[in-house]
Image (cartoon, rainbow, N blue to C red; front, side):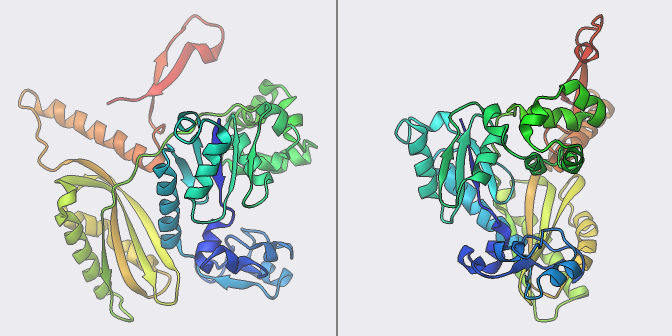
Length: 392
């Protein structure tokens, strides 16, 4: 069984101060540059027909009393990290791709929390410090669907097959996956309103019409989903700098230089180079801003880091009161030396290994794969070759 912890409107509740602040109010996350599409919305705004991603002018026309609040990605990241660590303290190996939703397997937790799924989910709810919807099913997609259907502060367990439960659900649930999000509108126009109708179709026909997205949509509708991939607990390595009021231009650049020098001097780095970092700021007018950077190669040179990070300061939407620089990924130690037997070959292998590692940091563990030939004489194209992880 796989459990899903779903906290609806998590980013909006953190930016507003608490979940109770959303009750009875029409709230929305303001666009980044004062114009454009709004972010998450409250239930009060949704009652007026406002939707997340709607243009600001249209949203205000539908709901003149709409209140806009500044996004706070720094606080959202910190609050969700606290929630994930609370789940990990009860023994859960958590997977989370975005703030507000997490998955973990119940199989290894029954012996710790009483022997049943209900007791494990009860321990999960006690570990959380904010309201959440909790559900469990055989697959991640079905568990997420059950969490969306259950009431706040309630727990649901899908005892029957995932396919039978999903058959009654609308195809709009496919919007929860990036690969299948674009298919929802087309499927609805074709008259396919439920996942059961989608599952009754031939997978080959969907593959012919929609490609890989159609295959993935049919898999999800049939209750076939991959197991959660537990995250690696990140190392907390960051430095902050309090800025004077109305700081800008060279003051910001000097603050960035200080942050880079402090970060590289931290003993917790153990001489390792940095693969990725995040530059964030707490804004004077409320809210926050953050920008993640993946370096082209792991480095520990402050000048090169400054060349990459300094242009990001121009993206600040408002004056900042605090600037924060954190390390998100590490490479090999700076004193890593090559063998004397063939330095040219070793340098080429190291560059290849570095390129593969950088792509995986930026795009995920499955971003670089190798074609492995299997049954060359097979008439089925899918059996002739398979994809395996690339090891440099």
